[in-house]
Every structure is written in structure tokens, then in C-alpha cells.
Length: 279
Image (cartoon, rainbow, N blue to C red; front, top):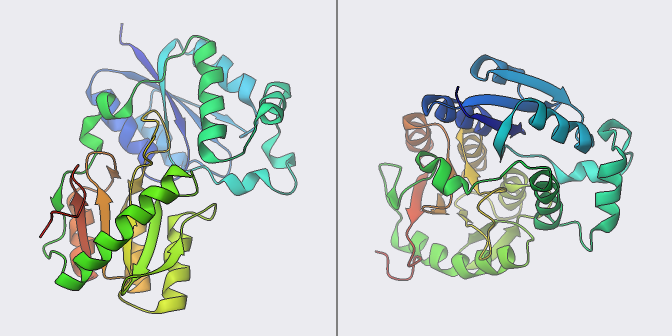
């Protein structure tokens, strides 16, 4: 009998890609989707799909255990803005309310880490995604046909340590700069909104740097780039997106490179030594 992998699915293409790769490796995939968040098309690439509300933590755990999931993966964005204002749509159960009340902070690491720990305590493991599905992660080097100009390299080198410091504070994973000045920093609004804000402030030609946090938990909240990201960059007329190779999920395959080229966008992975020694 195939081993069952639980998939806790948020927004975008990421959950679908995880499901496809996991099934290709022989896993049976039991997914949990969230109303008004998860793409219903996910159902076509998983073995079973259960719909819940974001706050139904106990049902999430019960569903994973009933499916026989020995391990699980979180994939796809869940907007943290749901925590502000009316919580009715989240339908938080007693376990979720108790978890939220216990948190000393409500940043991504605190919330997601606590949820993962609750699920692990129920007997479902959360593997390192870098080890479970290494095909998801982008390599060092140019994804686009074009590489950075000298000025773009200068912006990448300038932005890299800023992004790492912001990640270390668990504020966000992306920084947008232009001409050696910070234009926008990603926070609760997400990368796409930060890119749009930067374009409004500084116009075309911005440089976006996206990195893993220095203490990144490889089980969840990994930096991700997909076709929607490239679409946003194209609309903002950004010049370059540099990401941390080996720690950033790339979604879209060849279509991602083609979209970057069509937009005149430089898309490049930066290796473990960072951009300091690059061209």
C-alpha cells in the first residue's frame, strides 16, 4: 500500500505542483483545502480532498489522521490578514483559539510553527521540503536569457543583506530597491503588493531580491516564485528578480523563463556565497 502524504493547501500553483511530484514518487496524496483560498482544480491531482475553514485546527488534525497520513506538507500562501477584523469566516475552533492565545507574537514563524507543532504532536511528521521534493527548488544562475547589467548587480548586492536582515526579523522575504535605495519591504501584504507599491513610488526598473530567512524552517513558508509573480513584475516594469538558489520554490518550469524573457525581466538564482562574488 502506498504511503499517504497529507497536503495542507493554500493559494496558487504550489499545492498542485507538490501533489504532482508526490504522486509521481508513489505517494497517495490526501489534501486539505480551505474555502475561498485553495484552487478547486487541486481535486484533479490528489487522491482525496477535504474542504475546511482556516480556523478548524482540530478537524485538520482529525482529517490527516483519518486519511492515514504519516507525514504532511504545507504549500501555498495563506494571507495573514485573515487574523485582523472579524474572525467569523475563519470559524476558529477551541484548539485554534487556545493556540492563538498562547502565542507571544503573531508573525509567520510563530503562527505556522505552532500549527505544525500541534499537528506533529498528533503523530503526523512534517519533513524538510528541500529533502522531500528537491525538484521544486531553483538553481543558481540565470533563468532568463539575459543576465543582470552592472547597475543591476550593484542593486542586488546592496539589497541582499537588507533582505536577510528583514528575514531575520520575520518581517518578510523580499526587498525592492532602485539605484541603491530601498523602495519597499515586504511585510504582511505579500511580495506582489510590495512590488506594486515600489512601482508606484519609484517607477520602472526596480530590483527585487527574495531570500530565505537566516533561520528558515524548511518545513513551511519557503520563498516561492511563479507565473503570477512574473506577471506582477511585468506590470510594474521591474528590471530584475534575484532569488536565493536552493531555498526558493520555482513554479512554472519553462513557461516561467519564457514569461520573464517576454517581459524583458532578468530572473536569476544567487548561490550560497551570495551576490558579493558574482559577475
